[in-house]
Image (cartoon, rainbow, N blue to C red; front, side):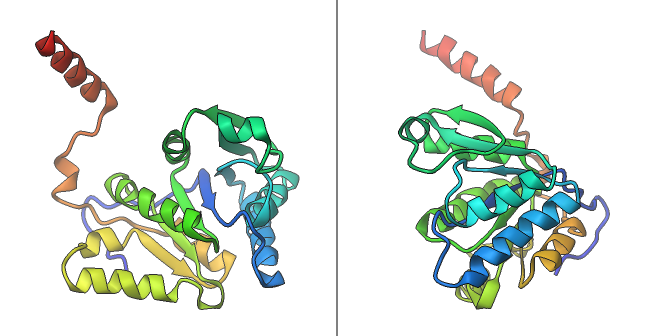
Amino acid sequence: MCVEMAGSSSHHIRNICVFGGSSPGKEIEFLESANHLGQVLAERKIHLVYGGGSLGLMGGVLIAVFLGGSQVLGVVPKALAKRDIIGKTIGEELQVLTMSDRLNAMFNHANTFIALLGGLGTLEEIFHISPWAHIHYKPIGLLNINGFYDNLLSFIDQVVEHKFLTSSAQQIIISAVTDEQLIDQLQSFIHVIDPYMSHINWSTKESRKKLRLDLSLCL
């Protein structure tokens, strides 16, 4: 539950990054839900950022978004693009060098995230993005179809209970059982300002200055 506090602000979704399996999964309901999510995003004029290609659940989302008239940006490592092993990217394609660059680009081009069902790659994306999302107040939505993410949500509760994660960090993760509910919750998300994180300057300009200074000292 999110509690509104002084200094908090509501969340407006412009570009949403979606993670999901490159397989359609076992049940037809999984692919139908992915396709429906794309339709909902297009109806609400929300643009899609994703990891490129057209396979599995992600293919269902991107085709519906594209046909619905919203913009699509696929971020693809060059090694995968050359071999064409993830299918054709529909919409605009941004090629990057590494998988890490891919996540960085997706994070920078989106202000909200949704995780569909998926395997180890999807889980890796959720956990990789979560610390950044907390720092920059970008919520992550889990589409919890048929209780798929129940165990993960219980694990996160346990991590908070044992004080390895703060409640302010946990509130960045939102779950719902339908596409509409999840998008509604993400759009009404109100972040609670973390008093410790709010004083940290993550400006890349400052980081570059420090890097130049460090290099000068080394020389």
